[in-house]
Length: 224
Image 1 (cartoon, one colour):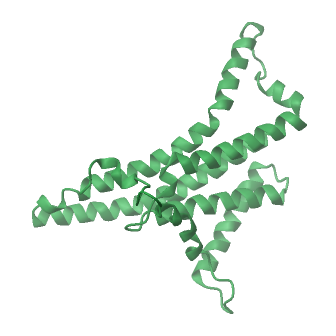
Image 2 (cartoon, rainbow, N blue to C red):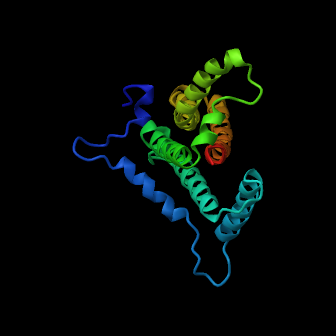
Image 3 (cartoon, rainbow, N blue to C red):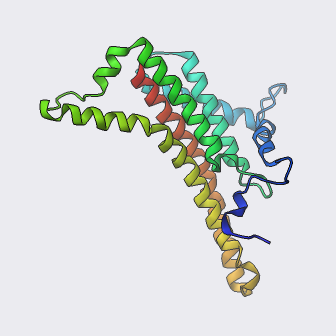
């Protein structure tokens, strides 16, 4: 029996060993098999997705092709999208709904970008703290604001991802928990609303992965 509403996000399956984090490797089941003579639909889907992401990333980078950056952020997108998608299956743990995963990813990316920027482009990072056209009286205040905004970037990235995943799952849990007490008409309405929510969650899983990777790329562009 569910003790509280948030117990569906409990990562503990036993006292000694938690098997829920094994869901992080389930995404490899959804990677396309490249050994077929005829490309499968998974291959076509991934190729079209990669073409779109490369076009978007190149546009953000002002057409300055950096293959390592593009590869890193495309991998980040696929990682988050597949983990969000796998969490929609019954009895599979949603790892991206926990800050231990999302904050680890965002904090690692942010810290590496900040170290790279401050070590290699120190003057640029200092000038970035004061926006162009700031009055002299407000410069010290703007430095404080920009510093705080830089420090909360990994937190906002992680909380945005986790909160959106948790919100959809909580709504689906709330609606389904009343299914045994409904009449046949209301039960059909509940099932229809659940189907709509599943489609919405599919869209959210892709959108949140896209937002996370795009914002991470924008932060990396600012640092160099």
